Image 1 (tube, helix red, strand yellow):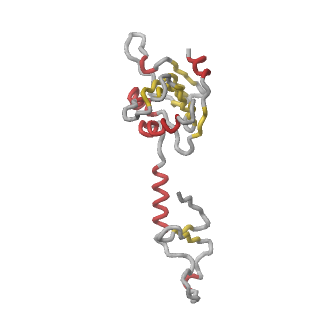
Image 2: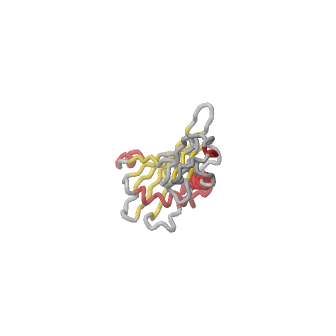
Image 3: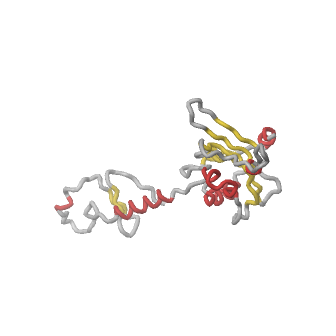
Length: 200
């Protein structure tokens, strides 16, 4: 029974921020999605529970639970795939055996932004594995977009006359005052219409 076992350990919910959690690797890779090769902090990961939302008008939800869902057999004794091809995988509970303890600790993923762990320090140990296995998607496209925006905006000339002479070129007087020039980099970055850009 998982009920008493799950309630015995307090879990710490962690909001994972903008990088969403995704259970699709379970559907695409099956048991291979739980592979811990290359992650010395993780010895073994077992899928214990899976919640599927069917998206029908009845809002049907199915919860599949076992000691190891990937080790189950069907009615004929053949290996059974616990991951349906349809339905939305919304929650999964794993038992993760970390290298610092002989006893596995529960890890719960509730898509898209909630990770429940027993120890706060487990988050740092799980992060590389979650990224590598595809359970967490990195937002590299966003960072790339910001870099492209900075490069594009730095190609425009400065909006203000920032030279030391007082000639106040007439060609700059017709530019809108809402252009802002930020000189944090070697080449100035320009932001228009008072938009802001977070610079790491």
